[in-house]
Amino acid sequence: MAYMLLVVEPIGQRAERTEQAGRDLYDRMLAFRDDLQARGQLIAAESLASQAHAVRVRKQDGRVRLVDGPFAEAKEMIGGFFLLNCATREEALAIAQACPAAEWCTIEVREVAPCYR
Image (cartoon, rainbow, N blue to C red; front, side, top):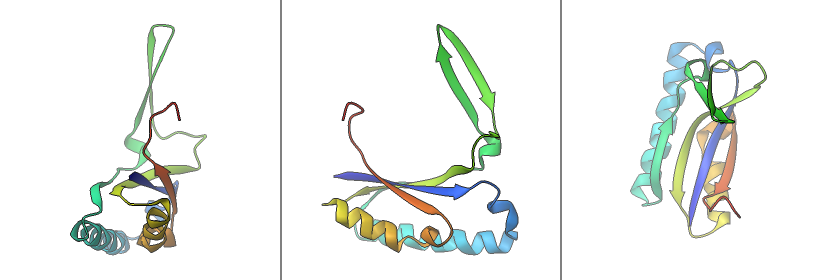
């Protein structure tokens, strides 16, 4: 089964770090990714830019609305993801617990499934 681990981080957390501290954390995440890849469990993984560079697209009543970030109402943002191939939910949860980002973020574990489920 496929599971997505969403790295949910507080807004502004990145700005509080020095560049070197950020690079050190990123290196830990790359090592975690490489381990998952070596074990054959990684389908995809990416870090995402800050939501300050995001745009929301909404289509309603035939009209398209674009809203640039940052988004004042948000307290958290998706900072990245891991798409995994796991035999069980428990395996996905164990991987989430081992993720270095769990020390400074929330890791949301979601099964990949059709939207009607």
